[in-house]
Length: 333
Ligand code: G3P
Ligand code: CA
Image (cartoon, rainbow, N blue to C red):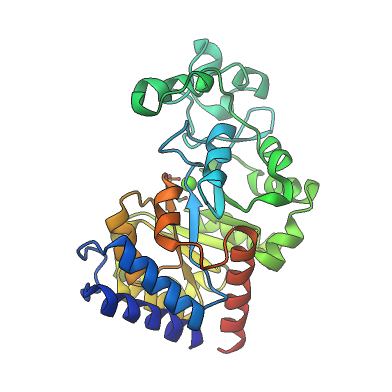
């Protein structure tokens, strides 16, 4: 299998370059300089079409309030190839971008509007809430006056702002509590003419912990690239699902603690990409790159971007390269 060989070679180059030959995710950190050189070298010669992806987890949420336009703008500035959206549905049927099913952790404002479940609030109520102030209190080292008063974006507002200039990594969150979420997501992609570019060049990846949600989307449009998320259930348990996952998804998003070389290899044999979450420490990033992951979610896209360097395709070209490599991999099976 071509993909396995190429990734295996990249990992070997890293291993040789860094002497970090323990193939567990918990290997000692490699030096960014050595890592950069090894990745650049391996990709120039062996995997020019399969870049490693930096996914801005809730944007650049280490530096700015998660899932706000400020966080997405910053993620793209800092080199994220994708910006991530977690979806919730309002009581009047609008998809908004927020991680938690409830407003309490990150929203500030009148309790009747900004406390409790998103699914029980109208969009008008939600739009009264401030989701920037909590961040300034929680992370004073990154606090900025302009974060105060930031609003929860609708999915349409995010797609409208970045259109075809960004890649999107969208999660159907708690879809069992939000009937119709999948159809609404696909309608939003159609409104912004993103479905075709999702299919052709991975401009949109759709992720979920819910296999039912992903299977539903696969039923609605089998060509859309989907990613099955896993909580930290361990490498062996995830490996046991891969033959099934492969029937509807092109990738897996495991918790970083479940990732080892056996999982990456088992996925690559099936032409499945591996995008662990959420990786913020450069040493852990390096260790995961050394076992051959294809990208990762991070709150600090600049840290991963620095490790990856500028020799590989990034952004839209990077996503397109990944889509092409996967198609070639599946054609060779
Ligand atoms: O979607 C990848 C990762 O974000 C999953 O965890 O809880 O941050 O959505 P969570
Ligand atoms: Ca997520």
